[in-house]
Length: 314
Image (cartoon, helix red, strand yellow):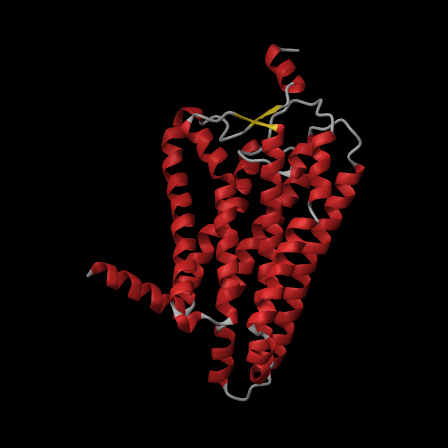
């Protein structure tokens, strides 16, 4: 066994994987990635600023959008240090404690985003299927309770499986598949009994991501049923248009997750490039696209953003 392999097995540090074979081009690759992280930060901050400063946007739909933007902002910040650190050359490895902490935030924020998307689907269902009771059902107090429930659901269910990572024996080479830490990546390197992590992790995915996806699908079936019952074609189109942004947000969140899960489960023979590409899409695509989607597709946000930039011009 080579010295580096012995170091990888016995050390409590893990080697991060950037873009295999392109190390000499990292400085150039860092330019688009830095731009993406800057866009994630500025785009989501802009959405939060617009919702906070515009009284007409103090409505349930936009409160949920603010939760989504805050979640996306935190997701971007949770991986920025390691992703850009590799490309800029000052990060090559990560300690076990830091890796566990990062995996907690990544998975917790993924569950949080899924929960927020479910809450937004509920909002659209009430707005379209029961519009006369919309304001009485989604009061500020209820929105606050939904927000606290989302936070507790996302943060309190994960610690048992994440804390156990600290006590596993990692006897396989400590080379991560990505430039950040994921639970499934860490247990792949463990030689200890990982049945608890596998079963509990699967239960978390089913009770959070899968359940949320099913409930979102059911809500849209009910929305579609209500919309088709509307006599006026113009009213039907108008009702469906209020859901376009949310449908796009659901798509950019769930499609990368499904792709990454399939690759981790069945794609061990695939090129490391596939793992790296899907990992970065999973982390960066939703936080990058959601502010763009809502700025383009949501009329109130679009108008307020245009006013913001016109004001700055003068």
